[in-house]
Length: 356
Ligand SMILES: Cc1cc2nc3c(=O)[nH]c(=O)nc-3n(C[C@H](O)[C@H](O)[C@H](O)COP(=O)(O)O)c2cc1C
Image 1 (cartoon, rainbow, N blue to C red):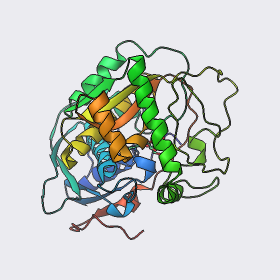
Image 2 (image 1 turned 90 degrees about the vertical axis):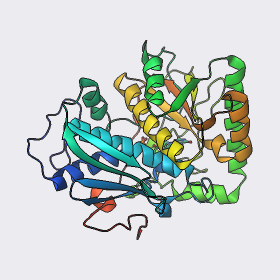
Image 3 (image 1 turned 60 degrees about the horizontal axis):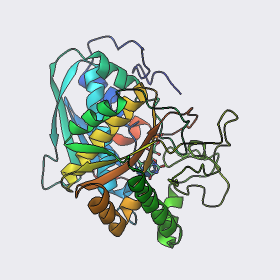
Image 4 (image 1 turned 120 degrees about the vertical axis):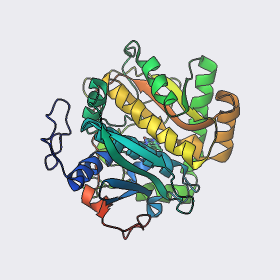
């Protein structure tokens, strides 16, 4: 549903709230927006604590994918996306966020602390990006055979560069086929691994579920949409036939779109958080241009496949995400936990755990 949560403006063009806001109101506004960040399997692996004019973002290790993501790399990318969204929410109120990433070596789950000591008028672009936080959706499947808007790829590369990440378009036919082949291999290996299958099933609720996390059936196609080369999606339905029926207007010939890798020069938690910030800026920038984005992290969850992509397709830089960009009519839905489930106020600094 588009619109307001409390009095928070979440849609493009909706009026900003009237001043002045208390620190508690600002915090609620920021967290209400931040929960709409993308996260691996919609695990939403984050918690926030607020003390006055300071917000702390923690990774929630209880929501980490222990089998697919033992190092917590994808968990930290997801938290980086939430951090970018929180900072953008502050900008939408004309605050200038002051951010300290991984501020305490003794608390590896403390992703960032943010405060907002100064003000400066938001730019039109920041406001447009913010207007897409709530409406952006991950795409799963093929694209229409329509080119991307001119200038979009340059804007996406620039978005990545702001966070020391590189968006590498994989344009050459042979390299595209190699990337698609790595995803196909990962999907095959995943489907034969009982532990991985069980973990994915835990984040793939059945139709009609009231869960506020995981990947719901109305966010993926019931029938795999094949492209050439084929970039298979994850098997969220695991044989149940769940998913969206094809749109009557969808053409049979679907394009794989523009394939790309988001990479970082190093592979430390700070780089994963950077990749997450870059990812959300990329996704929102694409959304403001009417482009959709599909994500494929399957091959990056297998050490050997990740290494072969690193050495063969990304000049030795560390691949953090595989993306495809294109144009398509999107009807996918998604869900989130309410902000009160993830925000605690007061002096509690133990935000890294959860009771769920
Ligand atoms: C680190 C990361 C990895 C992801 N990997 C995949 C993936 O392999 N396949 C996929 O369909 N979606 C992937 N996603 C997208 C999430 O499933 C999606 O963000 C989540 O379900 C919430 O839905 P939304 O993005 O439509 O709001 C990934 C997202 C993140 C942040």
